[in-house]
Every structure is written in C-alpha cells, then in structure tokens.
Image (tube, rainbow, N blue to C red):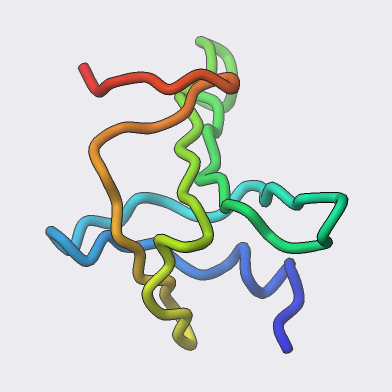
Length: 90
C-alpha cells in the first residue's frame, strides 16, 4: 500500500525517451467506482508563481507501466490536457 504523500515524491518518467515529466501534483478519481483514473503532473507556477502557471499534464492510469521505489514509469503520448481540454503540443 502507498500513501498519496509518498506517491507525490516519485519522479514520473516516460519510457519512450527516458525524459522526466515531473512529479504528481494531483490525481483524478472516479467517484462512482473509487478507482484512480489518471495522475496529474503538477503545473507548478513559473518563478514561484509570479508569472502564470505551467500546463498540467494528465496521464491516464492505464498508461502507468511500473511504480518503483523512486520512479513511476509511464507510456506518454505527446499530447496533454489543459483545463479539461485535449491540447496538441506546440
């Protein structure tokens, strides 16, 4: 069993290129089933939050390949959700 606080400390890494995507800032839970639907890679503020907010990246739970001691490996597509809408990368 893993606590959310421990889960948030792990680095999220894409298995396609080994790139660190960030850390978990939030999770999406289906309230009807109680299942985790997705993890949200934090869109932390730029320069301590003074100049806007970075985009949040939503990774579906089914895209998680492995949860290890220090890292979460994911299959990551080059598209992400921003404020509930699917956006293509720039």
